[in-house]
Length: 162
Length: 162
DNA sequence: ATGAATATGTTATATCGTAACAAGTCAAGG
DNA sequence: CCTTGACTTGTTACGATATAACATATTCAT
Ligand SMILES: [Zn+2]
Ligand SMILES: [Zn+2]
Ligand SMILES: [Zn+2]
Ligand SMILES: [Zn+2]
Image (tube, rainbow over all chains, first blue to last red; front, side, top):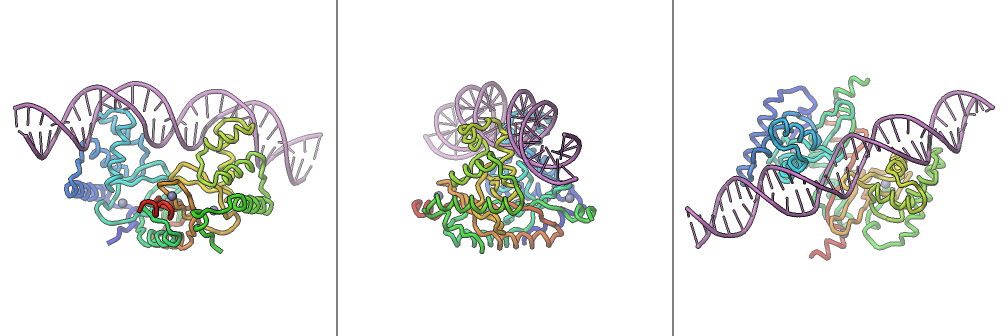
């Protein structure tokens, strides 16, 4: 089942939402023999609690408040680890990172970024990815990784702009 | 007519290719009353001559060699202007900029970036963009701008890897 | 001519990201 | 046990990317 981005733009129970994602992430870690060490786990929790994209230095500040060293590699290592294993995503357009809300599920996220309120959603991107694969294949290009990001207005901000 | 990315990965006459793009860019500037000042024009030429994505500081170095001031805003302003008016594109994945090879033509480029030789192609992205529009619309999101980028192997590097 | 808008010059600084090496942890094989 | 090698973390230092802010100059329409 593909994730549904509607939730991200609607008011919902953040607590449940992040606990679910965290539990899924832990399941992934167990299944793949990953070491979800304290910094890594806390970094993921920070992203989940924020429930939006955070810059590496924002994460670093929060980590520092909890006793971890305030040095860039601390945050970048943890973030890179999470991204590497699909527990978080990197949003290039924002030079930022966001927890994956569907870790373990096969999904190609298309990110929708609200220019107004900065809400971020992972939209179902399978159709988009397939179209891109097809476009690439037609010129003999072999895709390894892709980034699909869009900036615009979320439902709430679009309505209030009218 | 949609641009064809095949050319970008094939050996071709760079001189013609860049003169065409430059001429198209000038036509766009005339048509839209844009001021293609010396720095801006030279910046576009630099991107076209390189025929690949260049970082802002690479562009700045080249501009400096030609008598322009070696200060970041010089390059960023020119690059931002070109991007703003569709004469160049920003490749977020590379923190870099590339001249648009189809200025004035309606197109939604999907960028294909070779991880091996760093070749860059603007693939026809209309189908991809439509799929993304549809995905966004299904959750009530209104897209203003989008970035579609893929990293992988170009035909030449894929073949030589085998 | 004159004012408003646009473009450029210039200084300084903010933000994002990585190289490199030392020190510590951990689990498997001897 | 205890070695050993892979992985993880601590730490310093730096590199790369991007923008703020303000002064000056140019352009363009009135
Ligand atoms: Zn995800
Ligand atoms: Zn919004
Ligand atoms: Zn283009
Ligand atoms: Zn290649």
